[in-house]
Length: 292
Image (cartoon, rainbow, N blue to C red):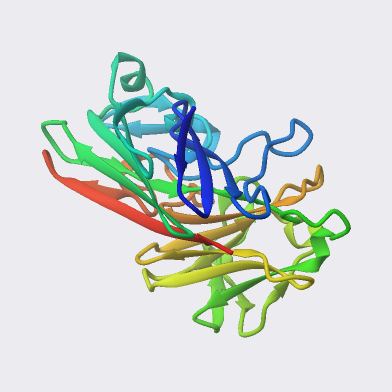
């Protein structure tokens, strides 16, 4: 386990999955990150790579060959190498291997950098294509936050989600594990979204951000605690909590990719939201979380 620390926060990151597991406030000792539960969701903040969401039948085809991969890809289950580390910054690395090529036919290096500055934790995921040809991939963040953070008498319904810009967002519903792009909806976020477990009875709320800088704030209505996640250029963002096996957490998920659409033909090259990266090129994906 890696520990980053300053005067305000103590952050813990697991080399397995390069997963953020804990953010504790120095003054109050409040734990902001969901600590996991086998009854609802047993992760904390997995990295979604090289896909976001689920493939139809957990299968895709590329260059005439069929591959099998579980939901959200495999990076979250692999041990990363520590490349650099200090009191407030760490970079971890995962490179392609014989094992990853059985599921995904590209060579890559995935670097994840966490940097702590005052009350803000910045997360940068950097993908380098080390293949000889074009690489297809998706990537996403999936941090889960405690709701409530530290109030023993507070309830899930004492929290709300505020999205800026405040506007009516286009939403993408899920049909099973597939995105139903033919039946887009809307969600009016001109006002805060009051939390209730029933909000997630149809799975995640998926917003189309259209790569506009967006801040999503999760805050309490009974005190001043909260978190605010800002992402500059993500096409999608998921807001999710487990249902019907509920847990006291909410995930705010910036996505550069999305699950297979209903009726997708299975070809990776035709998959919605895939990134395309030329040989020896690098692309970076960044978001910041402010804890208050």
